[in-house]
Image 1 (cartoon, rainbow, N blue to C red):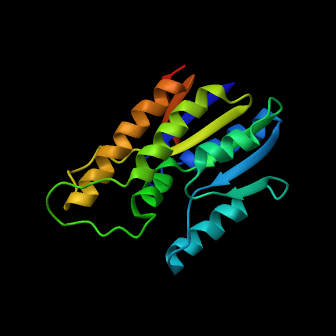
Image 2 (tube, one colour; image 1 turned 135 degrees about the vertical axis):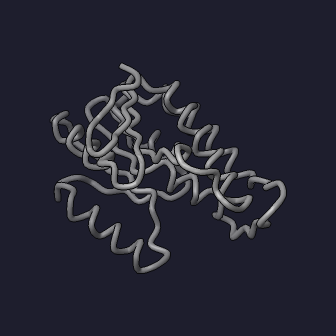
Amino acid sequence: MSCVLIMGGARSGKSARAERTAIASGKEVIYVATSQAHDEEMAARIAHHRQQRPAHWQTVEEPLALAATLATLSRPDNLILVDCLTLWLSNLLFADGQVYPEIGNIELPARFHTERAALLATLPTLPGEVLLVSNEVGMGIVPWGAVSRTFADEAGRLNQAVAQCCQRVEMLIAGLPLTLKA
């Protein structure tokens, strides 16, 4: 098993880098999309990503049960590209229609903890290659509002934990990769 984490900020080139890496592998690619089109702007982003991918790639849309999906799809002869972990994290935060306070402590839903733990337990056991795309959201100002701060904190914790599971970690800045772990 080979696991690679490709991180970066918005429009850093992380998805394009992951897609080029997947193509270069020469393996059958399964693209696991975690995003959901809750509005027109997100639908346009999803459509743009679909147009960028090779038509012969299998696409699986999975907004919540990522570990189970990876376990089902991974084989020694394929490569799974997951785009992206931070959208998946956001999906988990709001999966049950939670409404969070503007200030104070945020109680994360049980499914958030269960799915996160399942992903971290599953990654090292997968027989095939996995490319994981994630946003680096912690390099700017501290977000306004309790849920935004909680999201930034949890994204940082998730990126750290996933990086520990991966053999390679890259950070994309202005479309240029910086190897953090090789």
